[in-house]
Picture 1: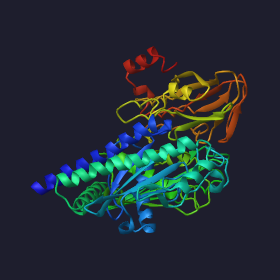
Picture 2 (picture 1 turned 180 degrees about the horizontal axis):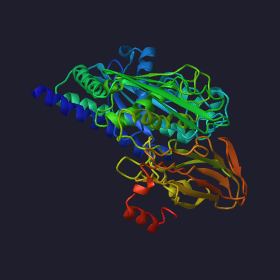
Picture 3 (picture 1 turned 90 degrees about the vertical axis):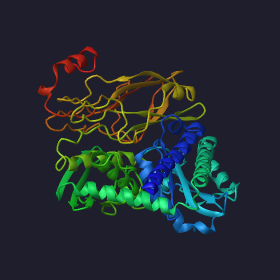
Picture 4 (picture 1 turned 120 degrees about the vertical axis):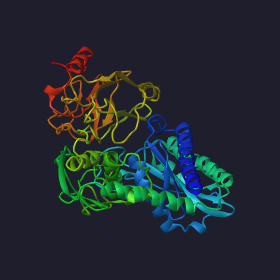
Length: 530
């Protein structure tokens, strides 16, 4: 009994170790999307590359993809051949976190002259060259610098050749280099805390603790799955895509302790960069399942291993290189709602309505400078079975927004409005979360550019559940009357403003069953119109 208590204490400490690394990354990152919005992840891995613990701060798309990413490093670098001070790096979309803008940095942890674990972290950099943050590229080669697995540092010395190549190929060299160095610092801080843990508990390695964490989590997940009814359930979702609409189809199968998600029937890979690499598809699929059936089971290699995800190679949820993938959010971040649709049948009364899904990444640029900056547009969550949906909340990504003051400080842009969008939520016994309205102009009346790469639910809104009404679809237009429908790069002419209306979440339950006092309060606060 005492041993199990100590193992649980050390497990909790591991989570604290990686969370401290995440806080270092938040405080040292150059990019606002990491520093302000928390678009990052940090994890600790055993010698086999199995994720033992993840930081609380971070996104499922990063954490769950990194669960597999570290194994790819170990296929290329034998752990016992690495030296103290070595740091590894890649941004390979298929062996990292899904697109070129995310770097994964891995550091071996040495204790008593032996590598006992690995620290890994990732964050989004604002630019990686190529065509920039747009869905217009026709292959990954157009999307920017594709970095294979290599050493960022060797025995403590930076790889000068790599840094020179990176800085020559991106539009924001200082910021790109700074974010990579922040990832290195994050791993170093977490590494020091892990070494202190080993000393405090008189451990020579982490193998025993790792086995306990992963076996316990896998067992807990299998028990949760076994408690569900056996069967097969199918659900479909249609989203805007980029030109042709995209059909996402999933079949959930449960047999005893086994759960499988099969995406057979989903659309083929797109010619534009909205494809979701299999690692990103797996990440958000499993996250959606865990949200409903096992929210309290810690995320690690054990809990993730209990669910199998199948997808047809060449499909939009399993594109093969060199397919373009910059805006993989468009598909990947819709998948938890697709999982909810499958689970509503065996888990009646436990599943929320659909929400906005994909965050709207506001990649803004222009001259003079030239300048690049990033903000985030966030829609509403779907209503819950017993509560209203959360407004302007990024589910499933979990990122925060970037304060408008930050964006205005690093660019000549001015936010004229950023507020709730009335009547954007789907009505129901419990209404969906509201979207937002954002109005942006240039401080000096000059033109500027916006990438609509991740803007979705402008045609197909979030659907209600159990009689609830659909949320309001989003829109993107320019004050001169131009409506932006595709996911390309668009110029806002001089003197004009960009007007964004973010989609709202679907409602839950019949609207006539809504509490009259709740409805009156919505109207009094201007959130709902007659």
